[in-house]
Length: 161
Image 1 (cartoon, rainbow, N blue to C red):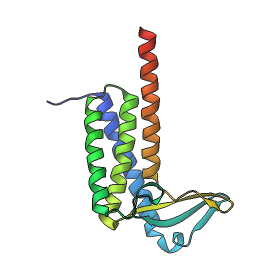
Image 2 (image 1 turned 135 degrees about the vertical axis):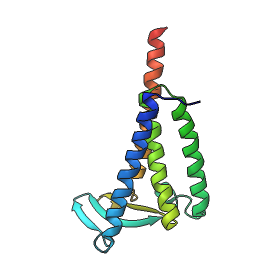
Image 3 (image 1 turned 90 degrees about the horizontal axis):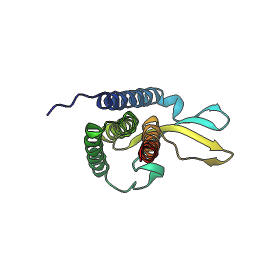
């Protein structure tokens, strides 16, 4: 059965947009690897670097084969696509789209390079947050949007009763 709805379209467009932006920024960094590889100081507290992360957030699971992390990512994307298909809420669709687009961006990296391309390096003094990319930002933002959506839906239900 075909379902045409605005939330489905919105989530799909957001997934595509976040994937495209992620891949474009990674391509730009890779194309300028000679400059970015040693790090570029953008401003105090922020550098551009080129790092390949074989694991997930903060390098965790770096010893897990790239294909296993890819398979897990694809399963997660499948579940999110099913949830996107079912939702009638635009905020929920936005969260699903952001997470799917980010996950697909990192999946593409794993397929191409066996690791994820990270390049955003924030720091304070000698303390560096682990480098990340825009796909990671989309995933975290999508999760935050889903929490916000859940809170908003709970409040709306309480007001109705």
